[in-house]
Image (cartoon, rainbow, N blue to C red):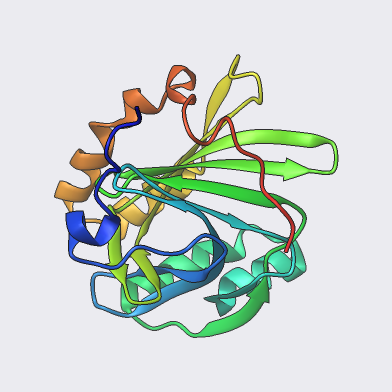
Length: 209
């Protein structure tokens, strides 16, 4: 005989769960309350353990206009200006679209990171640990805030490397992240080693749509 079904997400968090296939919006929200970015995602699974979502090329987004310029010009140095704008609290958002890869995102609600898998036509390109604030659910998605530094991990989990350490150093110098934020993400960092990249995400592949 099977066991009793587990509690629904809303019974655990007080916020409704999302249906498989539903579109939700991930927002990066600055401590001032201003939205830094928005990204449309598609729900793959929702449980108290994690919200799993996907994103296909063409999905709508809103990014800081300087980020959009950096992408369009293929000039990473422009991102420096974007962080300076963040520090002053003055930035504009520009429409964009997800490009090049299929994204699968696994976000435990209380974690200071998400685990991401990037797919191309050739298969899994890499794993990616994005350090970010814990989830705060909204009616149409969830809010978090990217902490700029990441881990990039080979598909077979054999090797990994830090990414965007220079940008993390910059935002620290600018005082964008208060010390408690950096302490909290530094604490779970070792648990995001390649050895932790098993579980729900690894067994899934994104679907088009």
